[in-house]
Image (cartoon, rainbow, N blue to C red; front, side, top):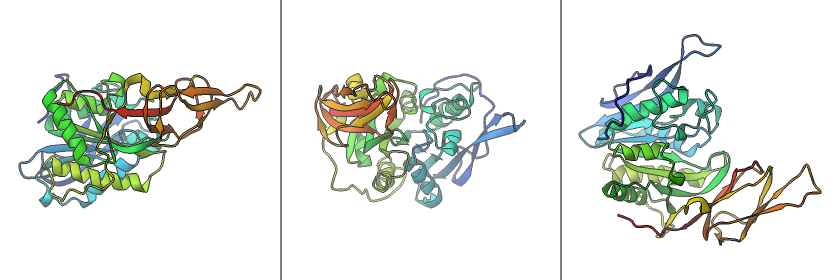
Length: 344
């Protein structure tokens, strides 16, 4: 089971399911919320518990970002379709964990403007997003053995469907993370360190000792059928690998044997000005450091020539800006390079 990361006092959040119970339970994590139009209201985060037997406890989340839909669909399907009798252990299912953002179809919460995946371990007495993260950190992760976080590119990016390995210093845990990501069976498997940012759900799960796997599945602000199919198949694959459900692993033929990584800052092509980004390549293209990645157009000052942006690394074009308009610092493209580090 996961370990408790803090002894801080509990916040006002409450839950109407037995987090340690058996059978199928559907309910909510409720957090008191008193906006202008609701004096004694709550924000409700949907949660389901499917428990049976003495096996591991696995947390599966979708909707970490509200504009990433494949994971939300897959977790909701598990809630509806998974037979409790076929579970060995417990599934804690969070189909829209960032509920305000999911309701709005936004990356960040409309309640406090925060990115749920950049506030961990949260604050039980903080803003709404911080309180949701704190409940997951303090009440969900300590009950768990493993964590599956289903992401896609959201509204701003299209990303090659892939499983993501969360690196960590614990070599045994790192080995388990690699095995879980490979078991997912996505077309690509990528080591993603989020530029060393430790405020994410997956980094926090690793600090709690949980076997952790994430995904990036398409994106673009919609639902891509191929990516959804990969998410459905891969989620059941990894739950089978973790020993919580029985199924025949289903791995398609088009699996790359090569492990990739995002090579730090060099992986990202950032905009240097306000403008409209025109990419020069399509997803999956082989690109090289120093090669033009695209250019920024300045449509309100047509006399100004476009600005060319360049790749900082060799590899595959892994992520590509979907929306044309960008601001300084916006991510326009992401390159995944062959993995060069050590695996446990």
